[in-house]
Length: 412
Length: 79
Image (spheres, rainbow over the protein chains, first blue to last red):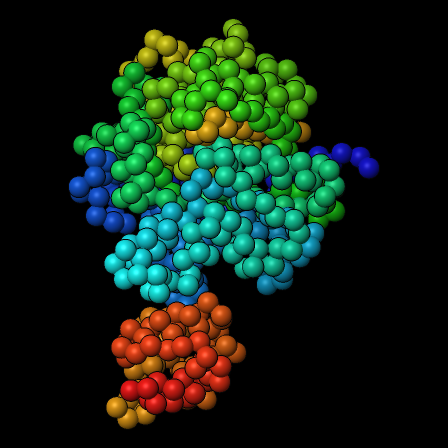
């Protein structure tokens, strides 16, 4: 059987910038920050008081209270984003997607809020008062199962938890499922809604978060000399992946091809990137090899660009090792400068951002990049979008644990 | 407490705690079919009853409870 090429035919999202793809894209190109002070809980005693929260979303209103209370917030966001993607791909929401559809979700920490709630109840009232919904809300595969139930997806399913590389790995593994003719359509998502007082506290303890509490919108400054950590964010992004032949049979528009996927593991340190970004470099090399193009064909890199001192430096070094002189020419940007760090949802969001970048021939900027760091001296598209014709774009995602996942999208 | 008072308390609890549409809640309503309370939901319902009425309900006592009316009568008998 011939190897299928894989296209993206549907996108859906809910994130700190917007509650649909179109609004999100406008904010990305406009260089608008989605970061603000935390409203979901009282964060006043925490070392970090801001995050990227989804706004104007009421799960009770969206799915009814009886349904909403069965899911945790990541489940709500996943079902919401999936609806837009399924409709965008031209499927009828009233019919189950069926056995021809697979589903793969990526998440970093699953229903961590539900875990915390259950522990709190256990401590205060004992085991017999723990909610019977606790397990189904906290398990990391909750979104996978709930989205499958909601939309009738009965093909193969997977949940990937490679921290902040999770949903980039999810897209890559779904690509392989289609290439190998296991299934010809896969709904792929990345969701995180793990901003709680405990996670903010815990990430702050390992010095991973920006503490620039005075100006939340300006705190996330990837590649800037004064960057001091990432900004927690929440959201869900869903993509409909399909074999080229299936998309042609259905006569639907495509956003682009997923032409390359590479993954690797640092095997170095549980949080710090390997020196010189050699682990990330291996993933980039594999993705480019998988896409069967040369390095100079990459027109844009959606960087992992978390705004931590270590990531941005080592990612820069890895890009230099990969591309040599061309590293100084290629447009790079970090959309995390606007969204914050969607953790396990980041790969899917940034895949969407990369596809829209390529399709619209517009590169979203890295905002808050004002003071250059002499060690981060590449073309990060600072503060204003750039018009550019693009044929191939690359998206980097790296996670705690040393997980690296790189995707390449192509117009043809 | 009278049976109708127990019913009103159960109705309020279903509405406010579980988000069930009040129009669906009557003595004949089947918990699973009409009110869409699944096996996990039943555990929640029992926990809510125990908290509201300050009683304990054993699993065996639930064997014959399939409708709101049967639940109300069980609660009434335990008060």
